[in-house]
Every structure is written in C-alpha cells, then in structure tokens.
Image 1: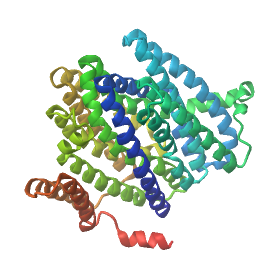
Image 2: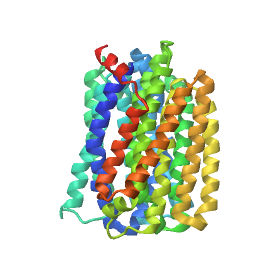
Image 3: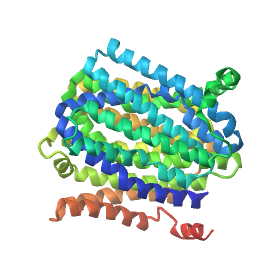
Image 4: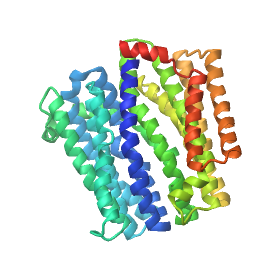
Length: 483
C-alpha cells in the first residue's frame, strides 16, 4: 500500500504541478488584475458558494469513496441511488444559497447572476468528484490521478480563449461561464470512463426509478449525514473569512485577501491530493485490520517537509512574488496579509492527513466536535479583528483557527490509534523547521542573488533538510519499488 501511495502521489504531483498552477496564475490572476477591486465581490461569492457546499454534497463523496473501496461489489446498488440524492441536493443547494445571498446578505442582481453560475459550477464539480470516487473506489488509482486535473486543463482552454482573445467582452460572468463549459466536458469524459471500467452498465436513467429505490436512498442519506457535517464545518471555518470581510470591510479588502489566498490555494492543492489518495487506502487498511501507522507516518513527514519548505520560501519572497503577480497593485498591505496567511498552509496540510484517517475510520462525531469549536473561534476572531485590521485580521483569524484544528486532530489520532512517536521523530520534525527557517533567513538576508534564485535555493534547502534529517527512509522506498 505504501508503494502504491508513493507511485500515485508522484503521478498526482507531476500532473497537478503542470496544470493547476497554470490556471491559478495564468488565468485566475489575469482575471483579478483586469477586474480590479470588483474581483473582491467575485471572490466573496465564490466562498459563499463553498459555505453552502454541505447542501450540494452532504458527505456523499467521502461516504461513497470509503464504502466502494471496501465493498466494490456494492457499486451497482449505490450508484443510481446516490446519483438520485445528488440531483435533489443540487436543487436545494442552488435555491437556498440564492435566497440567502439576496434576502439576507443583500447582494444585487448582477452579483446574483454571477452567483447562480458559480453554484451551477459547484454542482458540476461535485458530480465530477462523485464519479471519480467510484473510479478510485474500484481501485483505479492511477486513472483517478490522471483525471484529477482534467477540469483545470479544459478551463485553461476555455478561459484562455475568453481572457486572451477579443472574441468575448470581458466580465466576471463570462469568466464563470467559461468554467461551466469546461466542467460539462469533464463530466462527460469521466462518466464515459466510469461506464467502461464498471462491471455493470452505468445508466444515469436508473436514478428516475425513485419509488423502487427510495428505501435504499433514505438509508444512505442517513448514513451520509456525519460525512455531511464534516464538509459543512470544514468549509465554514475555512471559507467564512472572505464573506465576512467583504460584507464588513468592502470589496477592496476582500480583493487584497484574495490575492494572498491565491498562493495559499495553489499550495493547498497538494494537501487535497494527499487526502483524495489516502482515503481509500486508509479505508482498506482498516478493513483488513492492517497497521495504519507506517502510511500515516510517511504521509505526515512528506507533507510536513513540503509545507514548511514552501511556506517559508513564499514568506521570505512574498514582496517580490506579489510584485511579479500584480506589478501595479503590490503594496505593503498586501505583503503583510500574505506574510501571515501563507503560514496557514502548514496546519491545513496536517489537517488533511489526520482528518482523512479519522474519516476512513468513521470516527466523525468526535472530529466534528473540534470542527464546531473551530467555526466558533474563526467567527469570533473575524468579528473582533476585521474592524481593526481588515484583511490582515482575517488572515490572523484563519491562522489561529487552522492551528487549533490541526493540533486537535493530531491529538485525537494519537489517542484513537495509540500512536507513539519516537524521540527521533520529534527531533526530525522540529529540527527540520528550525533548519529551514534559519537557512532561508540567512539566504534571503545575506546573499546578493536575484530573488528568483533565492526562492529556488530555499526550495533546495528544504530538500537538503529532508535528506539531512532523514524525514523519509529512502532505503525503504527502494524496497517498495522492488516489491
């Protein structure tokens, strides 16, 4: 299982490093620079769509991924009924979110048009993830890895035509519609592949047989509720900041936060990749009563080293990075916000590992208790800090909340699985942090290299620390390769 994890992780990283950053920095950043402060409204609307994601998914993806990976023979029974649930949830999701945005939050007609398209996009995104969860659940990990960036690849084409040609007038609504086209194409491709790989004729028309399948649908709906609560709470404490900031401080401050969040989002894609790859693997290990510590330790050390290295490099190079990304709009305010927010990447990465392990074990209620506290902490901190520090206050709230959640989940896993990290493990983990921070600080302060070379050097120092502190047992990896 560790060998399969390493191979698929390398494939995932290779694919996503090629495609997703190209969309984030080539397309999304270009749209922000052209839209100006108005992008802050778009960013808040996008996060509002995420906040109500619970109604769109209701934990179905995690539920399906775990159960199909353990019982592939249940796919013919689960697929049509879960698909029926998804269409019903999508309708509720769109209607309720539009109502909240218009009646409670006070968004105008133009903003609501954009929000409607963004909501449809989120329905399509969740449909793609649901279809992919069946593919990975059947054990086709590498095919799922290849499909992980298909939507962003197609968005590069559709949004690129919109942004870099004069065929369409520029507007945020057109940008959202260009994404819709790419997502529709992605759904068709993934569904076609699932039909070929499944051992039965997958037909979405089965979902119309509602009366016959209604008891099974109700049963699965109840089973997926704990997963739904996980989704709701995680989106609440991680996506609330932008909506509160835009409503309390205005679009210009939300635009500043969005510029910093873009780099965090680009980094965080690696955490999502770990989680999507680990969930079916953890589920199978637990079903077969095999130890999960080796895979947990390996994945934690990899993501810990990667997140520390990348966050530190971006922190020290933040001024030059922002001047490169938005040369006419870089400011000390933006530098400060990014300098705080980028450290959120580290606890976010840790959360991906340990929340995935607890989800695979179906230990959701205890995990959700910490998520509830996280939502309260984030809300209180934003309400206290935004009036004084605006986007910087939201960044501080995000960092504090994510540190609490990550620490809580690590503690919960240690108690649940009786993990006993060694003294050597503690020395490796903490020593790596001290080495990277000191080495990067000296590199950026005492050398006269161009910032690009300093940034590359900082990444190289992380790799050197990985070797020096033996964060990964390469001899074990070589044995896995031969296995």
